[in-house]
Image (cartoon, rainbow, N blue to C red):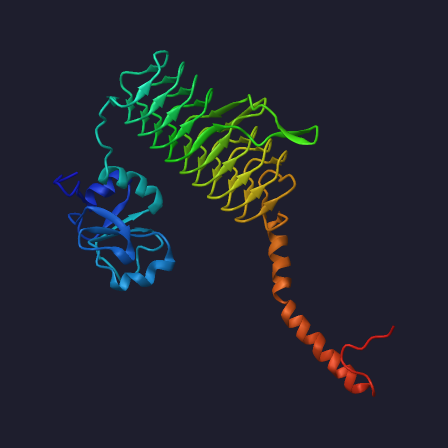
Length: 359
């Protein structure tokens, strides 16, 4: 790392190669402050080229250097000084952490925060303005609670967890270590449970738990229900995008990815490593096997086998769905052919007209 300044840290290509295990093409002394898309790169930037679709943008790229994979490193246009790596996205994890180091923590409790006398807040935790911490809750070492967060009674929050502003955690929820919850999300809310009593919808008390395991990241404005009588659980290392709703008693396996605007209805159980595409909907009481892939906007109404890829509505095997859609897209052509056949038949039979049929 060289020349830290008011504009932020600077890296040379040689330093970047050492940090990522990549190799330098050109001048290892070339310097950059940011990593940006190819079409947006300026003289202090490293341009990212991770996909061949962006190769045409190299012609007008003004970056100081290029970050590229081995398969794209030989393209002629663009910066001549390059960092060549096996996986550019993997390299970004390292390089962005060097260029944008986390700010030093200002541990302590803001004077406007309200902390119940029976709550326990570690001395190396930070509680922001107007946050509320309920009775019996515990915040571990390195926890950061953003402005206006509300943490209910008996909540456990593990070491290094970060709650961005306006997060609400209902009573009795458990958040593990190094969890990240983005602004506006709600954890441990009541599930949608009602029974018809005397002709009216009577609320079934939601008394179960909500457990967020270690290293989970939850996007902005997500809603995660508590269990009705059991527990809702998000497995370790899973990542939820913005605007995801997880119903009561749902289990999301370890290392799963759930993309934006997905809804998972109550008591569905997902295995480890499941990927759910954006806007997919999953009905309740299903089993989604480990490693399954669910396409964007899929409507899942039956169990999905481990490792299976499904898409469409109702969701079915992905290849089957693609074949069906290909046939649907040909319907216009088929209708035109049928109309031509009808006209030919009408011309061959005196007195008949297209569309005539026998009674």
